[in-house]
Image (cartoon, rainbow, N blue to C red; front, side, top):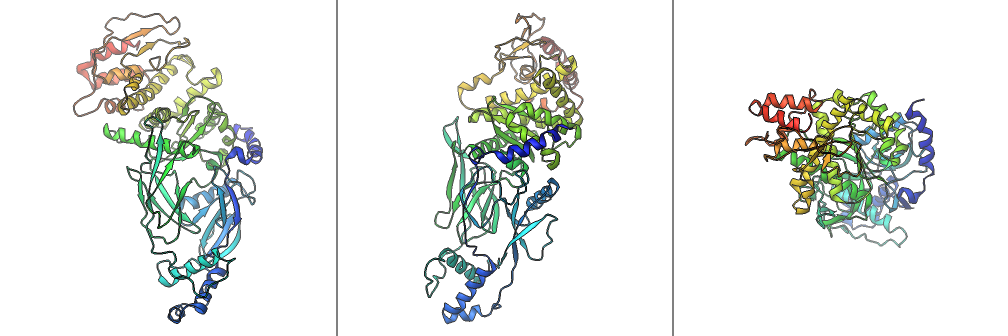
Length: 583
């Protein structure tokens, strides 16, 4: 039995028995009167004809007396993972307005999960949708809930009919007046506002940059994006109050943070409501909004990373990754397996075992991936809501992602297998630098060194406070392998090559410190002074280094040889520097 199959039954039991409180559930209230049902829209039209002034009757009579449905309000009920995938593709296409909870119920609390009473199981969420009457339905079982009349909202007559239907539906328990207050919604408006997120390091709210925003209510929606300052403005006009949501589906990544988002078909969080009276409203994501804050902070970190790459002339970017973000009891941990970007069966099997090590929270969903194919490119776990820690880990894993794109699938699968072997044999992905063999340790030293280099370099460059001096690797200590020492500040000393990479581009001349990884004794090397700088006036050191990390560079020795070919005038200095680092 495969790892995936073994956990499948466990997952079903886990998901079906977790309490609402544990899952921070979406909680529904009472069912609402649907103003867009064919029945209610017909009532509104009849009301206008009977109780409106003669001039209104004359205009209304020009419209056909009896309305016909334009859409069906349905709920799709998948019975297996294949049908769920079909629904996922339908939702991704955005051809129809969809929700994973009923559109005609009050929502008392928006949470990270919702298990519908119609669902066959918690791992097979239903999808509510409004489908045009003549559309071809997906091959998924569904239940018809209502017939809808969604008229032309740009037509003044039908817009008035919609307003009357909404008015009558919302006031159904009150005596109907002889005359409906025409235009009670007021003029239409283009929803706009600003989205901010709290930055723990700066102690202020900062813009949520370049994030997709969804404007939604009942069976209507529109999309727009925030700009660099967090402002958004929708191109479409609305008359009634609309909900404002963040989809977390952006050019950098689709970010998911809970099991229902991973196995489900929609990822969005409600920020609040907006209407003509408060248009331009500011929405702030605070630390209390745990899941929203995590996703917002990760999203902004990706934006910072891509902007840094642009500044350094690197064209490769974080683009359309599938990212999982979790809280947990462990310290910050990450994994960039690129299983969605590089869809290889060997990586899927490998991923299942690796994710079990990464975080206990993610174990139940591993089995579902066997059917849904919603594999992540990156997994991030955090145990503290701290912007700097989020940035550091996102920068680290993003550096892995662009390395994978530069080096290719075969290279990345090989590295992932090495780290998995170490997890299975030694409980840690890196071991002591000699496992499963010396070449593998050298491969890890290069790849993890690049990621550590980028995360330290970016924090050092981007953060303006002097206390970020801890990220300056100028006085890094290199250790030999096997590395078995305990209680060593691995930010300032390691067997990974981030200190070496720092010295390659810093332009400073300093003495390299090399210590034994078992005894912690200093090792003297001749010519142990850094006299290398691969930066130029036209190319940043970060770009110059990144360009070296192709598929043929797997170890520090490979990097040394390629640098010497690229910079023949510095060949001796490069040789001396790598020798000083024991390469």
